[in-house]
Length: 284
Image (cartoon, rainbow, N blue to C red; front, side, top):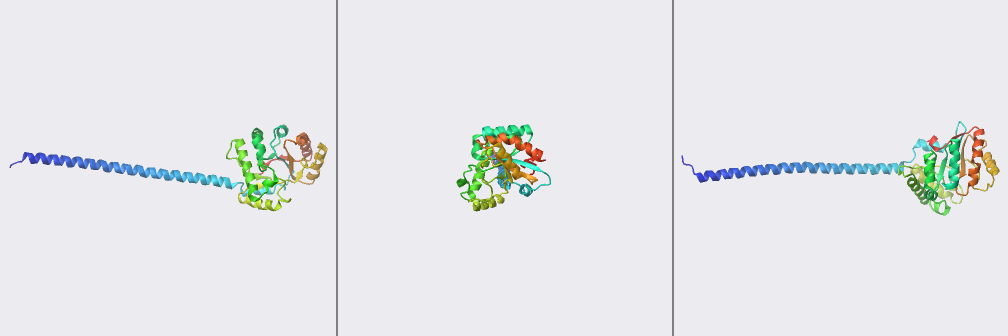
C-alpha cells in the first residue's frame, strides 16, 4: 500500500489543529459558564442587598411612625386614674443650667424620677443638662421647639413640625438617633384658648403617628403669678386635694429659681399625704 507522506503530515496537522480548536472551544465554554454563574451570583447579591436596603428603610419608616403602642397610649390617657396615690412631677420649658441642675440635685437626693417636657431651643443651649436628666433616669418628653404660640399654632402642621424639631435636638444631645419621646405637651395645654381649633386638628395628626400628649391635673402656678413659697404650696395643696393620681405642672426655665427653692417642700407634702412618686417610664 502506498502512503503519501505529505498527505499524512497534512492530515496530522489538521487533526492537531482540530484538537486545539476543540480544546479552545471547551475552555471558552467553561469560561462562559463560570462567567454566567458569577454574573448570576452578582445579580442575586445585588437583589439581596437591594431587598435588605428596602427592608431596612421600611423598618426605619415604620420605626419612625410607630410611636407608642396602644397599651402605652391607653396608660397615658388613664394617668389621672389610679387605685393608689401616686404623683408625677413634671417640669416644662427647660433644660436650664442653673434651675434644672438644682432640681436634679434635689431629685437625686430624694431618689425621685421626674418627667421633663423640654424645649428644643433650650436643649440646643444646654445639651449636657439634658444628658444628665436622661442618665439619671428621668423621662425626656417633648414641649415643642420655640414655645412661641404664633409659631407653634400657625396650623396643625406647624405643631407637628415643632415636635419634630425638638425631637431632633433631643436625639442630637443624647447622641442617640433611636431615642423618641413619643410624648408631647402642648404649650398652654391641649384645650382652650384662641388656638383651640388648631390644637384639635394637631391632636388628630399626633394620633395618626401614635404620639401621645399629656396635660396636668395639679399645679403650683409657678409660671402664673406665684411669687412666694407659701403661694406655691397653697396652690399645690388646693389642686392636689381629693385626687389619687396627680400630674403636677412645674417649670425649670432659667427664671424659676423659686420652683427649685420650694421643691423639697413640695416633695415633703406629697410624701406626708401618702403619695409615691412615678414618671412616665413607670406606666409605659
